[in-house]
Amino acid sequence: MPRFSTDMLLGDAGHLVPASDHTTLLTTLISAAMAFLAVFALSLSLSSGQLAQRWSDALAQSATLRISAPQSEIEAQTAIAVEVLRTTPGIAATRVMELDEQRALLEPWFGPDLPVEQLAMPRLIEIEETAEGFDAQGLRLRLTSEVPGAVLDDHTRWRRPLVQAAGSLRALAWLSVLLIGGAMAAMITLAAGFSLAANAQVIRVLRLVGARDAFIARAFVRRLTIGALVGASIGTLIGLAAFLVLPLAGEGGFLTGLGFHGAGWLTALAIPVFATAIAFGATRMAAFRVLRRES
Image 1 (cartoon, helix red, strand yellow):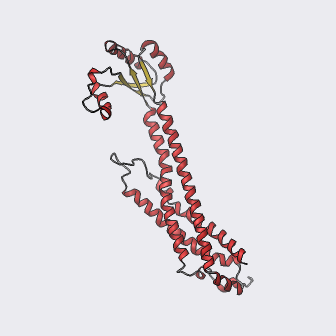
Image 2: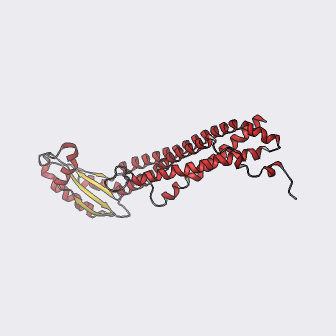
Image 3: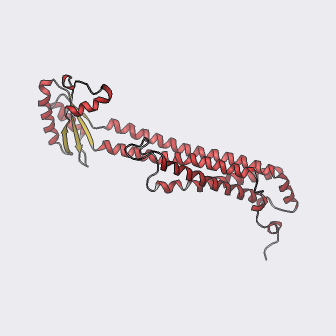
């Protein structure tokens, strides 16, 4: 037969904490605010990796050859360079940029009236690589001997800083998520302590009738954990709704690339689960610490 105890007589612990307890509302608001911030931190973490991959892919399959030579020689050197590139394994196609295209590239900095024809502009050749790519070092050696004024840019110096910057941004975003979780745990711990202090008389009465600390703690843990779950769910939904209305996608989007994509939307739904776990652990530790101190 099960052993009779006062805990069994009192029944469910949840009804012992007053429903009008202000700490429950505070826990709900804290959880909502932290979950809202966590949505943006998580989005930044996921998007930084996607941006790095997109930037790297955009530069990985292309290169640029710049030819600087006197105007009397530039056409001949360009023709030689095109032939060198045509016979280089790993190069799929080449295209010599027209002067109008070069003017369009310089227009944002120098205006539309730049006299390109009167300037000693280098000739630019766009290179499209195959999936296997080409031997950049070997091509540079060949160009040095055949086209002295040619400079090959395989975009390596552009890709590496972009990937490193995206990696740093992702690490910073995860650090932000951890700080948000830590701040939430600290504030909920304080809220649990205040709730226990405010209900000190209820706790004394329960102890007089023989209730154990585990039973008393369960009453506060359940109430505050449910409040955290409700708040975190609301904050997460508001955060996700914000991404639906912000200009985050399309060619005209100011923050193109930032946000959730595909399975990333399901990842954001894990925020209320983690927030509830944090609230449960923080509230439980705070409850037992206060009860041991007052016993």
